[in-house]
Amino acid sequence: DIHNNAERALRQDRGLGEAYLALERIEPRRRWDARERTLQEGLQQDERSSALSSAYASMLFEVGRYDDALAYARNASTLEPLSLNKRLAVASILLQNGDIESARDIADELSDIQPDDPGLWLLRLRVAFWGETYDDALALIDNPASQIRSTRARECWRFAAGAMRAAPSTPARAQAVRHVVDCSNTGDLPTAQALMEYSAIGELDEAFALARLRFADERRGGEEVLFSAATGPMRADARFMPLMRDLGLLAYWRLSGHWPDFCRDPGLPYRCQAEAQRLQ
Image (cartoon, rainbow, N blue to C red; front, top):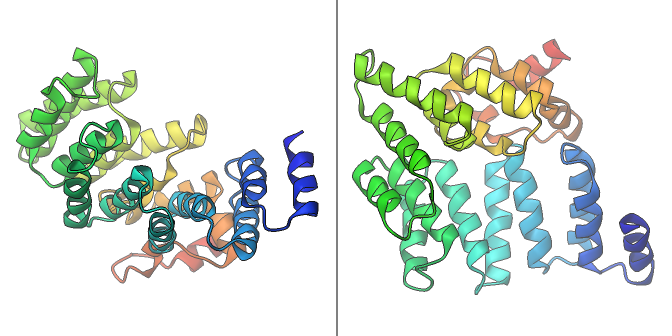
């Protein structure tokens, strides 16, 4: 099987990066501690492996260690400078962390190199949306080159823009939010987009309901969105750390001693370590 083959390969060559990648990928996704140990061991043996650096960046991104994830993603891109995907990974972490201008710079740079790449199109859409240039975002959605193929999904993105644009506590905002909820329920609006939007506009009940459905009940990936700039209001809510416990992230942070970046936020209404102790 994959595990035995990888172990056999490592007995012959401890520096074989592909074997560590194979071992990491067969671990259950939420065994972050085991995945991290495997990737760290691989990087100790082959620190110039762009694939290992990239995989470690992805894992760190999932658990809210954005600063560390960015360092490894940048290292992977440096080691493989012609890889569009590795540059896109750097941009994605920057964007989620709220550094929209740096993400836009990468999108502009890559547009001169490979303008038709689907991943680049998505990055440009997200930069436009979270940079609050909604007309640019809608133009990308309606463009013939749009990666959003269905009329319903395009309509949902327009509802999402409408909810962000509308003034709080107005009928227009309430109606747009109802549409966004419907779009999220039918899968016509990505979970990450809906979750960030709910949090950004203060619809925290909807945000936590969606997070519990998609991450706790359905156990889908994508937990990194919970640590984005847009979901800051969720992290300031008393329901956030119990959610982290239920996802298994609290146990990983406690056992590893590596706490997510948001725990350094001086405005946080609780201390992460104290909450972890209380909730164990």
